Amino acid sequence: MDLRGLVRGTVDWADLEGVGRRLAERSDEESVRIEFLEADNWLSTPLIVDEQWFVKIISPQNAFVHAVLTGARNIGAFSSGTAGFFERFEGPVEMGRHELEANERMGEIGLNTPAPVGVFEYEQFGVVVLEYLDDFRSLGDLSPMEKLSYTDELFESLARMHEHGLAHGDLRAENVLVVDGELYFIDATSVREDGMDGARAYDLSCALAVLAPAIDAETAVEYALAHNSIEDVLAAREFLDFVKLRPDHDFDALRVKGEIVKAADAPARSTTGQ
Image (cartoon, rainbow, N blue to C red; front, top):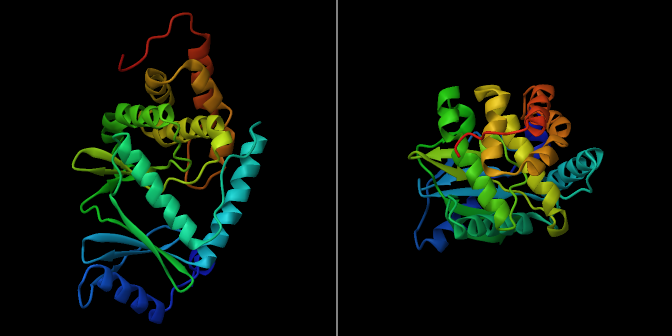
């Protein structure tokens, strides 16, 4: 077993069968067809059920790993000059409930997310049931030109989240999906209400980290400024070194910082998309 499998833990066959029986009961079927999904995920065991539901089985080990990652991220936020704003969960079911609630809240403000179906407890596990999105690609699967075509929508969607008091908290290429030409957001993490300002700046920093390598730093900053004030983008600048430390972001932080400073110093800014 590799490190990821060891840290994530495993769900044994008897528990998988038990979860399957519970899902069959919930759908008034005698049985369900379960397909295992090879996903780069530390925090759950993902399944596709009857090509209808996307199911995550969250173990106590997953909840522990989430708590460790949350602590590390809060230390990183502190190093950026902001009090930690990531929130941990009490256990697997609470993790699942948050995911459904985050999807519901984003859907209420007009953003696309997999439709929440339900969450339940089985033995020591939390089981999250979401709509299964067929034939999707993640933002990371797109070509640079394709990423550019979705850049304005990405920053507009983040701005809408932030205007409604929400933050994603874990924005990366794998957590933004393209389905039928539209962006869908998944795997939002939990952010403390009193840390929302820092979380919003962190979201913007992560978006710049995702897009700058593909569309270049100057263009990414211009699109960010089309939907955010220069003050907001300067706040995002403070998180770039922290975001750079994450293994799922690979970008030139110094160049992005330079483009932000150049935009802030410009006597008259012109913004893409306005």
